[in-house]
Image 1 (tube, helix red, strand yellow):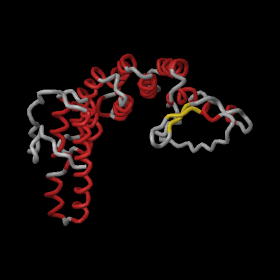
Image 2 (image 1 turned 90 degrees about the horizontal axis):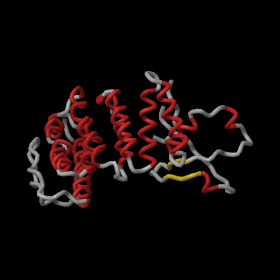
Image 3 (image 1 turned 120 degrees about the vertical axis):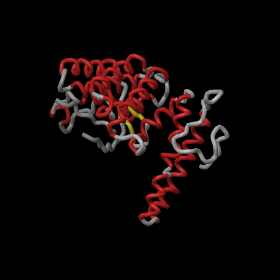
Image 4 (image 1 turned 180 degrees about the vertical axis):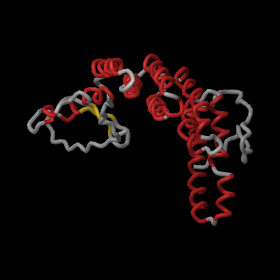
Amino acid sequence: MRFKSILGIALIPMVAYAANPVVGEAPAAMAVAPSIDDFTALDEEFDTALVEYTKELKAADKAQRRELRANSPIKLYWPRFEAMSKAGEGRATLWLVEHIKENRDVRSKERGAVLTPLFKSIIDNHADAEWFTSAVKSLAANKKYVGADETVAMLDKAAKTAKSDNAKAASLFFAANILADSDPARAEKMMAEIGEKYSNTVYGTAARASKATPEDSEVGKVAPTFVGETIDGFQFSIEDYRGKVVALDFYGFW
């Protein structure tokens, strides 16, 4: 069985790198850990390069497209984010995870070997990061490459090391969904734990919703307490709107 979810699941030069990095050659490790500004600048630089690359690709003929793809932004910037990741910038590690499908140098059958150490590094070193829940989501989404057992093991560790309730709940929620068919008893236990301990999170709401009955949503019923997330990532509780007229638009991916 599967649990249902109501989840709606700048060009700045960098002195630490060459202006035109050679594909496949990562720069030597930085002397100091990169700052937040370092990552933000590189990320914005990549986004700008990607926009220009997309425009050129649309306007190019077949031969030009072949040349453009050989020097795509992902090929040029991957070594730079990789070097930043090795220097300890967790968001650069997450960037590698989230862009691996765009990197044609990493074949589908090789993704697991690349992704597994990246996820382990995030879980071991960045469990207190505000973006840790995003890493948990990416881990679950890459179960196909990492492997179900390995993914569950890492999610289990993430649930223990995460600092925020939302990240803990997310780790348990995704692990429960993976185990729903192979170990339903354990999955049910995880969902119960989410509903009891982390009811103040989006995943706590999803866990309780998985046990809802048609009678719970009859016309005239008082809306149950739940936590949701807007399309721009803002988390809210229905309790904030008691006594007011509220229009809710639910969406999700199943």
